[in-house]
Amino acid sequence: MNAMESRRFIRTTILCAGMLLLGLSGCAQQPSRGNDAPSSQVSSDEDDDATSPSSTGRSSRAEISSPVLPAQDLTESILYEFLLAEIAGQRGNVGLSAQAYHDLAKRTRDPRIARRATEVAVFARMNSIALESARIWHETDPRSASAAQALAGLLLGAGLFDEAYPQLRSMLAAPGGNPADSFLQLTRSLAGIRDKASGLQLIQKLAADHASLPQAHFAVAQAAYAAERDDLAIEEVRKAQDLRPEWESAVLFEAQILQRKSNPDAIDRLARYLKRYPNSRDIRMNYARALATEKRVAEARAEFQKLLSDFPTNTDVIYSAALLALQSNDYVSAEVNLRRLLELDYRDKNAVRIYLGQIAEDQGKFPEALRWYMEVESGEQYLPAQIRFAQALAKQGDVAGARSHLQKLALDNKEEQVPLMLAEAQILRQANQLNEAFQFLGKALEAQPENPDLLYDYGMLAERIDRLDILETSMRKVIEARPDYAHAYNALGYSFADRNIRLPEARDLIDKAIKLAPRDFAIIDSMGWVLYRLGEHIAAVKYLREAYAGQPDGEVAAHLGEALWASGDHAEAEKVWRDALQKNPKDEVLSKTLKRFLTQ
Image (cartoon, rainbow, N blue to C red; front, side, top):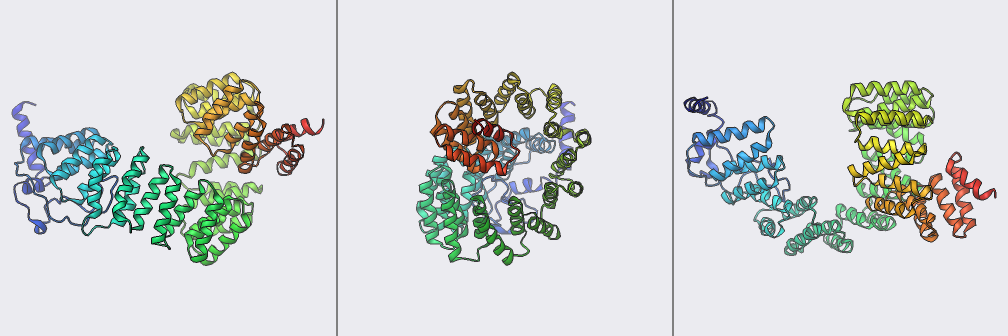
């Protein structure tokens, strides 16, 4: 296309796009009309509040007055850049669209274009361009609440707290504003920042002007908690409660802070609130769940019974009561409540069907379990249900049928092939076909040699058939691909510890794992076991007690008993072993440990 044809194309495009750009061309050449602007005019600030990813308050339906728009002609060059930006965005090239809109905003200084540039750049995650565009938007329309919110949010995201502070302070003090809501939204804006300490300092400075506002203290408490300043968080959330004693959110947050160190203290706080406000559903729900976490099952069930009595059709209450009953192996109550959810308007009936299948499976009612799993409809629960269907087939001895079912699913769901292959390997492993499982995953890795999930399971199978070389190679690759994969460090470290080899290296590996997942009881057990192997029996017992309290299975009991025995406490060791044997009579590690120590 030559220059003349190009100009003709642009002029033709102007005619075709006239309606689209009527607001831009018309308003750019007229003075502001305030609230009497015609409906065809493009508003500077719409009511969708979509621009700011981290708003600190809601804009009103209309700004105080319309912005003063620049007087400029709709030139071919401006139209070309406008169309380039829009068409690039429609074709999925949001990076080009954001850059084009930003260039146009700098050139025109039009607040509407600057807003659009900010929106597109935020969507494209081009944060520096979004921030520059938001600055232009705010400079050209300083009275726009949405522009101020967008700029403040982007400044926070960029860590420019000193520059954000005056913006936020002005917004909080704005006439007709709602500082209470603004503080609550501000904490959401700060949730994703890395520099938690600076975020806390910013909130404290802003809250200093609003000492009588409970939401200001609540915001400081949340920022302090994020910065791991729990003492300050407790102090501030209690100030919020002094100003607003009935505020459930503040009490729940205090319990969350307390729970980080002491679940009993959190339970006590919730109980005290319920004495004063016994009809609080959310507090009682959290109280019941906290009791269940502490294994105070009878008390937890009593609380859920109160909730079911007071809120018989509340699906969240019914669901929580069903899960507690399921955890307690009270299949009758669990099934009654789950079936009730199917009768009500519960949001995730597929999850309910999976739980009903699990109940039937646990009771050996495999045909019923298979029926429930097959009733799960399409959606995020569909593949988990199909995997459980295959596992139920395998438990009945039909390993070939289970594998065939999974292989057919893999052909129909190519993007889900890895989890389906892992499920097939697990079925072979549970059927004690370890070599077959190992070979199966080895073949799967030929097609996806760097897949960390396949590598992890392949390494774990290698450990089971005593191929420590392959275990180590696989776990090293997993760690390289996913440096935060705690269980890869743990698997390698535990394998060394269990074989009583390379113990200093094993300790280092498990130490890395426990730093990544400090509340994982399997990793805590590994730390206790490697300390036992290193002869640090007192420290080992401490870790193993914690692991056993959180995960009271046979293998952990075997480790705890052995460490207690080595530290000289034979009576307690025997008690731990015998109690665990009653609950886990088929545990191989526990049985072998008992034979080694109690048959001598």
